[in-house]
Length: 380
Ligand SMILES: [Zn+2]
Image (tube, rainbow, N blue to C red):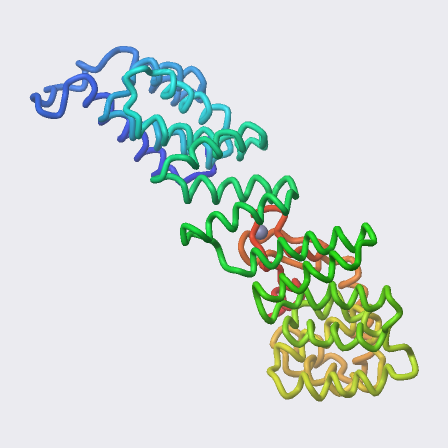
């Protein structure tokens, strides 16, 4: 019936019972001697719930619950529970039912509007969510949460200009998320400007992005893209290397591009330098480099041979394979390369979403900068 722990349902049912009892008898009055005095509709509602007819159960409970101060919190708890379970239509019914009641106190009306907006957001009805969040953002008490949700609506619509505008409003009330989020909005806008060929606008946006958060590897990557487009491969290489040293996670995605810019002639000296630089850091970084190199079909490149052997012989997962044939590191590298070619390469640290593409903004949980190269995570 549910993917939530049974305990949660028991607690909500307990809240319902208490809410209804409070509504019927009042807290100050004597507690009823027996539950048999409960309204028969309540027992019918429970029966529907037990026989897995949730809509009929909900009808019954909504009919029973008067939206007075004692039961209104129960409405909110139940609505939020339904929303988190993904049963958004039921959550919407609960919140609309609250809003339809004339006697509802103004603060509860505002809270119900906010909850209804969250239901619409969850249901993907973005225009309705947007309108309601805007309305609720006028209420000082709820302004920060409504504006932050509105920012999420614009992110989902890829309306980065509007998202940035809301970010600035959140900054003014000291409720903004980290400045890297604003830097990402500016990079999204810069990326669109590059696609449209408006390089001057893109440069301007990247400067602003860099002012928000420094170092910001995404801005360096986009600047590298501009340099490459404008026939400045050396500058592009410099910017790409800067981005990679700031964010080693990008190695798997960007190494092939970097090697293409460097060219076959200078490839080996560059790889030697990269290995020396990585070895000065830690083992995980070396492992990251080895996997990125194998994925880029560099398993047999001479400058990497010692690093590949080191990773294979020292990594706890790979040791077993390694004992079978240390002389065959090239074959093992090829097999791992073949696995990586078909594997899901990245995973979101926040929600576990995984896939073959890298995202700055997780498509599942909408976190920023949460993607990690999956091979590293899996084999660590
Ligand atoms: Zn995620």
